[in-house]
Structure formats: structure tokens, C-alpha cells
Image (cartoon, rainbow, N blue to C red; front, top):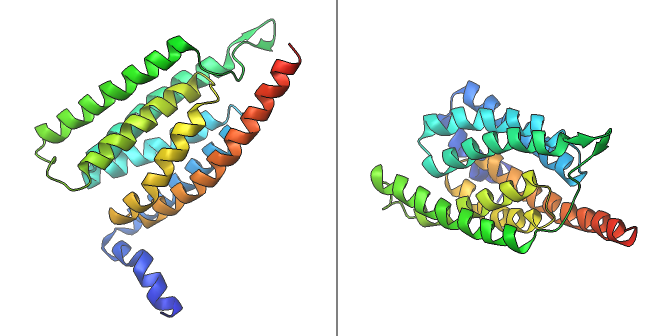
Length: 212
């Protein structure tokens, strides 16, 4: 297989895309990667960059009729606004909400978020007669992981990285199957950054506990 066949294998689906949508997806991928990079570095710029990325994806996914992904990005957009506020809270000039591990009460909330998101996405697929789609159940599962992960990230909890890692790994072949090669590559990089992010946040948390 020569380089042209490889290129055609990965990007042939873009031959049917408008040039505007191609560059919009490319822009969304760029800001999405920036957002995860900032998250890895525990930088509040994770949120403005994330808002730009998810805002573009909301437009694209609505046009493409990808309901599960649309719901995920609408949720990400709203939770980015909340997370931006939560991370930025200060008391006497010092950050109030620093990296921590989730509590038993938050574990219960995560379980509720996962169950509710499964019910929500399943219901939407049934209402729009798309449950017969072979990837609908995978979409439902990844949506529940990302809903839980995004809520935990907004609360600055270490464990959110685990939900990202699992969801990102599943999303790599999933988005390629949907014809979104650039987004598939984005999730491959997301996976690598999420693994590094987990390690860096864990080190920060360990140092914090040692200094208590």
C-alpha cells in the first residue's frame, strides 16, 4: 500500500464535505487538543479553548445528524462554563478548589450521572428512530463516560482522567467509522494526553497530601 492509498483510506470521506466544514472540523480539533493540553497542565484555559471547540462541534454535529455526539458537546459546552467558574473561585486571592480525589458522595453522583445519561441518550435514539444504528449502543456508553468525566473535571477531581482515557480509546475507531478522520486522530492524541494528565495530577495530589 503506497502513501496515496494510505491517504485515500483515511481521508477519502472528506471528498463529500464542503470546504467550510472541513476547516471548521480542523479548527475544532485544534482547540480541542489545546483544551486537553491545558487540562493536563491544570490550567484554567482548558475552558475557553474547550468552549470554542465544542461550540464548533455543536454546529457540525447538528448538520450531520449525529445525535449522541451532539448531546455530548452540548453538555461539554455548558459544563465548561461551570468548570471555568468553579476553578476560578478564590478566597483572599487564593484558589479555593484545587485538585482532589472524589468522595463517596461524589461516587454516588457519578453513578447517577452515568445512569441518567444512558437513559437520556437511549430515549433520544428511540424517539428519532435511530436505535437500529449498529453504533447507537456504543454512543450511549461513551456518552455516559464523558458525562461523568466532564462533571468530575469541572469539580477538579483526579479520577476524571480515567473516564476520559476509556472513552477516548473507544472513540478512536468510532469516529473513524463515522467518517470523521480528523476527530479520530484527535481522540488518539487525547488518549496520550489523558494518560499523561492523570500522572501529572496524581503527582500534584501526592505532593499536596504530603504538605498537609
